Length: 152
Image (cartoon, rainbow, N blue to C red; front, side):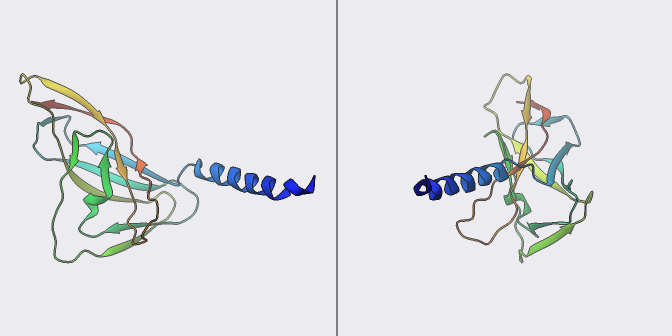
């Protein structure tokens, strides 16, 4: 009976870890479109907000210049436009409950050439906090979905 105690303990620890992974993040990512239409391959702005929906202060690490590299679309046709700068600092933003970090993000949608008729594209954006730790898994927090009509 006691010889399996180590295995049972390991299973309980693993199960507890899986439960922790399934917990909701206290950070909520939101995106809003200024316009519901865009031209294929042309950049347009998306308003991003990283909001602390938890009950405790949260620290969000963002790059001062390469903030766009922390974002990804959930479909391959959504591309984030990168920017250059001279000094890229890691900023540790402390968000109190209810506070948000809001910044614009320039993206574009790249669809195959079509017949000139608009195509509705629905997508989400995922935000990954900045990290300097090698090998640390950095899972994105996904935003709400938005739909834009893209003229090809």
